[in-house]
Amino acid sequence: MTDSATGTESGQEAFRDSLAIVSQEGKRRWIFPKKPEGRFHRARVVASAILLLVLFGTPFLKVDHHPFMLFDVMHRKLILFGTMFGPHDFYLVGLALITLIVFIILFTVIFGRLFCGWICPQTVFMEMVFRKIDYWIEGDHRAQRRLHLAPWNGDKILRKGTKYVLYVALSFVIANTLLAYIVGIDELWKLVNDPPARHLAAFGAVAGFSVLFTWIFLWFREQACILVCPYGRLQGVLLDANSVVIAYDHVRGEPRGKLRRGRERTDGDCIDCRQCVDVCPTGIDIRNGTQLECVNCTACIDACDIIMDRIQKPRGLIRYASARAIAERIGFRWTGRVTGYTVVLVLLSGLLTFLLIQRTPLDATILRTPGMLFQEQTDGRISNVYDLKVLNKTFDDVPLNVKLLSPEGELRLAAGPLHVAAQGVAETKVLIFLAPSQIRALSTPLTLGLYADTVLVEQLHTSFLGPVRRP
Ligand code: SF4
Ligand code: SF4
Image (cartoon, rainbow, N blue to C red; front, side, top):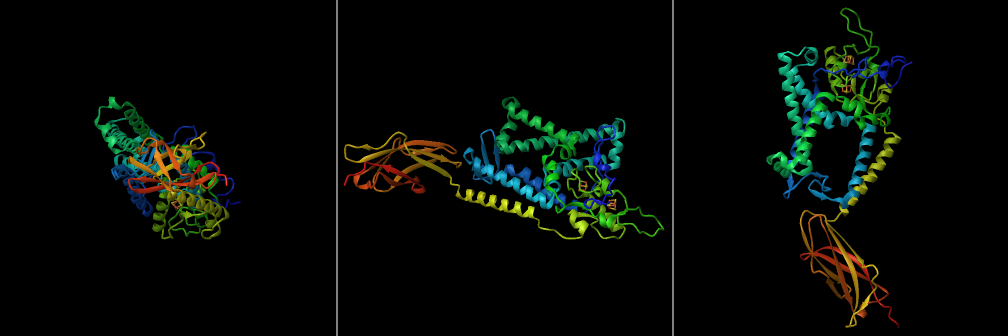
């Protein structure tokens, strides 16, 4: 019996019992993938170059002398696209994270691990930066394997030594870039120029992360995707037969059979050359079907397309396709699960957009001081006391004044005009005096205006308590 998702015969599932990166003896099996080439690889090189440019260039971008992006977790300060978000915006950050998670789920349900192959920093750095160093210094996969097994001699020490130095240097640059996202490029520049003893914590963090990155890219490598990555672990529940993944067309390819000179070919299109296995950075055979180890790097598509060109068969024996599309020879299907996720995503995105539009640079609240009713003044007017609290979400200090807009009366700020520091909170007592003629009921509505210089920035509404007038 054939498994429709994989095209493998029952009983040929032994590949599921072992990991390509672990030997029979339980030891690490090093993967030396063949150097990838082809149209998908070229497109990924361009995409990776753009991503790396964005990653390393963003800390240098500024808007009005402030960072374009900053993740200052120590001071609970977040700057996204030049807009400051503080602890008071936690609900927005939480909602944005939930929206992002739903987006990732929806995206994965439809397009599988497209993110892993094209955007994930681990894949971009591993395949497009560090693995390129391996090819440059140690040669292609066979030369790398030979060097790995060779005894330590002058050539091996020179090649491995050069490689290690480059790995450490690049890891140091990555660690500094991450620190720039946390403290800002100006502060990083200061840290770099000051003696390390003055900034031991920052220096320790950079040193620690440099060691961590070197270890990940030099030793841990594909295990990060196969054993650790939580997104990879989720694939089992997110993917279904309709998800577009990198798949082997078993209907067209099987039964596989080697090319033999002088023999008329009656097999499927797969000539069992194993080029797709040789290029795989996680060491799997995609012909066994979708596997959690596959990071959608597209290397096997390119490798197989090159073979198909050579044997004059159509490209795409390995391609982006769903298991169902391959088995039933159909196109993409919109499923109930995709509809459900889309509805949730649209609702969350709508709510997030609404809240972002509603977000004001200043947040003010005015409440009558607890325990206080009203006071009758000697001039016959009635007064109420309020607590005014203003939160400044901007980068700049803001001088503020408050005026009573309606009804007619007098407003006094207990401590004079307010001065709210950038990202700070200011509180003051407000006294409001109304003539008895303005008091229409037990509770009279009031409208106050919050002014920055002469500009009305916010209107506040509250109520005024007064004596009940007898007819
Ligand atoms: S590269 Fe293509 S033809 Fe060669 S083994 Fe893989 S699937 Fe078959
Ligand atoms: S199976 Fe293909 S796409 Fe998946 S990791 Fe291996 S080479 Fe990359």
